[in-house]
Image 1 (cartoon, rainbow, N blue to C red):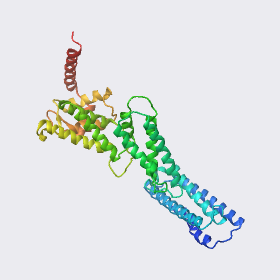
Image 2: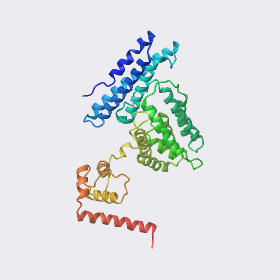
Image 3: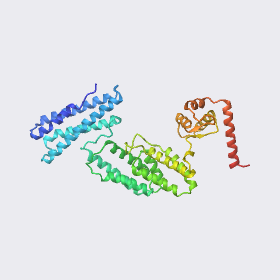
Image 4: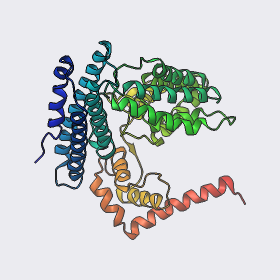
Length: 390
């Protein structure tokens, strides 16, 4: 049965104000005994928590429990930190015997916090606040990482607008007050951000690294408003530089690039908004739709599905051939078959079910094979005439 393992330490912390206000004289023996007791209690708590790693406790229960204990640690460390600050203002120094036990308890509670982060990282509330006692040191480390990356960005060639976007983000980190509230998510994201981009920035003196930086930002799900706005402006600027007949193909190429960029959705600059690739995919599809409407004058001409002059069996066989030849970068055949059944229709069926595609994918007959072979032979013949004339 789970219980509040921090209860004894919390009770001890609650008694500190009275002890300090009364200016109690604490003997060396008492201080030593209390210190030993605190250290032993912290070791006991670690042992109990370690046992949870091998227990049958359900994940959702463990997540709630760790979040609860995380909150207790936060409240008590902040309480002690404020108490020590007030005592310092009243003339007590950290060497004073009255602050010896509170300081030790604060250290032990922060050690338990680190234990949680190390062994229960996936259960920790990422939106939780980092304790005030260590916020300045964490922010200092964040500022150092941001300054290092900013210096690296100055030495590489990337799009000026993208550089401004990144510099503004890093500048905000550098200039933030060291005592400002900070969540675990924000601190961890900046570490991921800098570590990912440092590898790209290290290629000093090479060609324009704009595309490499974009790929890195997509990977870490940098769904920052300024970055999304820059990306949209960049695509539109490239579009307007082309002739009208080349704009549509360029947008389709951009959409393909967008869909093939890997995105680590387990992290995000802002978890409260859609992932970067989802935001930009929706925007770019709308731009393409409007482009098609402008070019053709009738929005209704845009089909929901593309009709192929193939039977469902022939489509399934073609997909199988392409898949087995490694044409698709995606290895999930289920997802591929669902995509084709959703976006294409055969010459006989407007609505194709995934079940039909899946069944025919594995059970094509000789007649279907003959039809597909004839189609492929015609295609090969055309390629020979176009590129290898006799």
